[in-house]
Image (tube, rainbow, N blue to C red):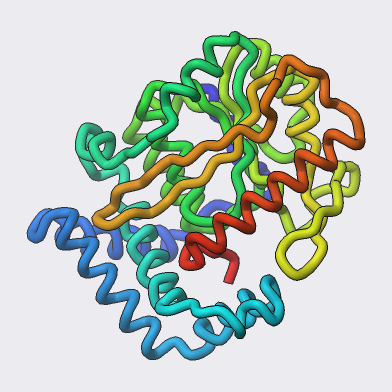
Amino acid sequence: MNTPAESSTVPPLSAGVRFKFALVRGLLFLIARLFSLSGLYYFGQLFGTCEWLINFKRRRRYHQHMSHFWGPEYSSRPWPGACRRYFMRTRCDRFYYLIFDLLPKDKIIRRIRFPNRPQFDAALQRGKGIYVAVSHFGSQHVAGLLMSFMGYNAAGVRDPHEGALRRYIQQKFSDRFAEVRQAKIFYADSFPRELYRWFQDNNILSSALDVNRERAPHLKRVTVQFGNHQAEFLTGTLQIALRCQAAIYQGFAISRPRFIYELAVFPLVENPDQSMDNPESLQTIMQRYANMNEQFLRDYPDHVTRI
């Protein structure tokens, strides 16, 4: 098993927490068995709508977050139903995530859409690996699992201190799916040489660059214009990919109705064989990354996270 063990600094989940998650999983799986996955999806839509109606504090946080990001533009342009759709999407994504390991693999694969797969596969044929820069929009944690099911040798860079739900479900995935057990996970404090070797073996690596807190003081950052404010994004993994001349993409996971997930990837670097490991090129690439995130949020305002 290639997946590293959890950081010893993270305490194990208590029996009470595990029981709570198991109880919710059992109820959701029962609904899916009785009414199909589509029935569970519509139940999630209804549940999310009820949350939207009664959870005033979260609704206010959503509007405050969007107003901070867009500034005056948020109050001046129409965003019909975005907040309600945000509640419905997050609830449906969480329901699906909780019972993911209980579903037949073929049923999961049938719900994957990957329009740019031919171009992605052609980039992999170069033999120098692929780096996919993701962001904290939508269900990016689902995207890595879906790529593993499609036969890609993909790895992700994660924060070692994750929430209880993510740790609980990750263990369930590892117990159920060989693809997850064989997947490689690098933590944010991994040695760079491991990432270099991963690209040299022509594998796929993804990480989120829009981290809004300091994981470690030595991690390099670049300041970009992001929405109505400036932000500092991580650059270390991207720089390693540039030095390895890996194909570099930006990826998004789009939640479609009835638990269909679309994997959208766009090239961040047009010619990966051309050396771009210099401050000017890095700044250009990172600003392009920020611009694509901004456009994605315009198109899918319900895919915002960290509310």
